[in-house]
Length: 167
Image 1 (tube, rainbow, N blue to C red):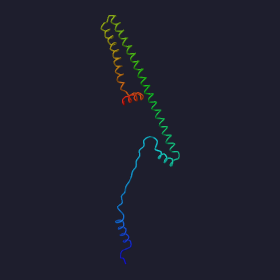
Image 2: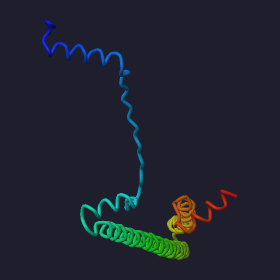
Image 3: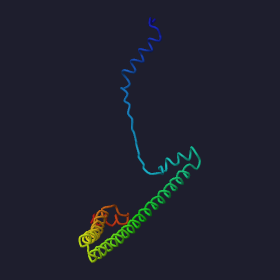
Image 4: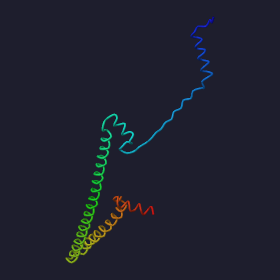
């Protein structure tokens, strides 16, 4: 009979089978990735949410709609605030020009009256200050307008410029 223990025989047989009949095993993995942006998941994911929690897809879509409505309201508030700021700035600029012109005219008149009352040097300074004030109001006003033309415009103005640039 055979001197070997039955377990040793089976180990030899297993070793022969593994070594000869089966090729070396190769492991392969295939990965698939998909990316989605936006507040609403793809339909398959929504369906999976519904399996876990009934009506979850409806709740997710409702949440996305509320978020979009909120963003639109906030954007509308921002645009309205920008429009109001521009209107207020125009009013302030106009008032500044009116008051500057008034001060300039009053100082020229005061300088003329002072010269007529017998103080030509003092009248000259007062009148010159009035003229300098008038010039500075209009020159500084023009510079401010030139600086503001480089500020971003509202969206409707930007879309027209983009169309012109693309042509």
